[in-house]
Length: 158
Ligand SMILES: [Zn+2]
Image (cartoon, rainbow, N blue to C red; front, side, top):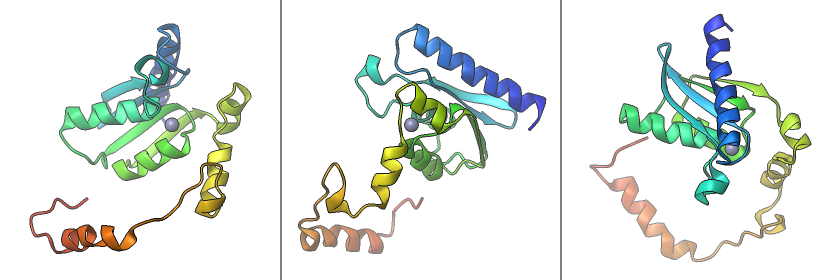
């Protein structure tokens, strides 16, 4: 961790403050950096945009991809003011970041009412035993689309 890393994290923390002051959503901020330059910034906008997926990390990822015109951020580093929730963790993997720095930990978020631990526990449960029940139906009818994708010649792989 360098002085530069600390400064990018400080920017993520100030975005968390900014978003909170603007009543955009929860107190979370994130910054996407490539080659020592900020590509995109974001803060949580869940309650102001009625978007449960508008976490700071997802907001920053969407902007970074838009700015770089790519769906992969494999040369990028994410600085987030708090350890990512399972949704953002997934987004981080899909975006293929090369590194993630976080300041606060999941346990810190839990103390102010943002408890992600239960989602991690849900992942380990059988789908039908989750607090939101998942049920598999119509697999046979859905399968041809997958088979077609598998044979499709002009597909964009990712
Ligand atoms: Zn999240």
